[in-house]
Length: 149
Image (cartoon, rainbow, N blue to C red; front, side, top):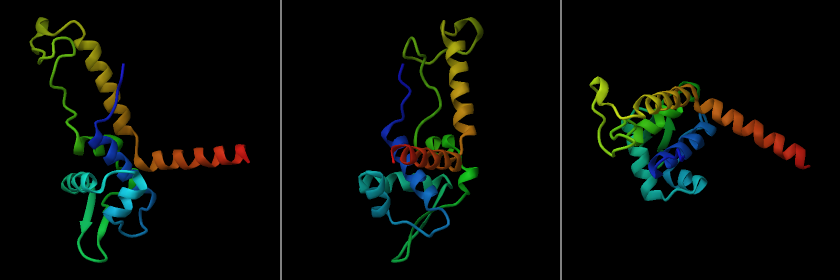
């Protein structure tokens, strides 16, 4: 079974990880973020606009402008970012490719199990902050470098 992000979710997470790494160090230009995250600049601009609309990122125009996080990385969850750019509400039944009817016996056979799994994923993504992700990534890369030296 695959659980993956759409391109927009993938690119949004990359951009926010980059902005988290530079949190408090000034604004970052679209081109800089695009190059560092390997995201096409025009697509990144659309993603950042959605993150601005969601109140996650602040955009400042002008020569000294750029993008920066509005909230502290410790208060910004993985779910917040994904939900800002992807449709996270379930629309279709996993078996019939249509909406499950939510009236008792009309649920599909796997509705309950699938709902529980979706709820667990939601809880995990909501409990995971960008500060924790960057801290884990940074401590992991330090361990990798020290063991390979």
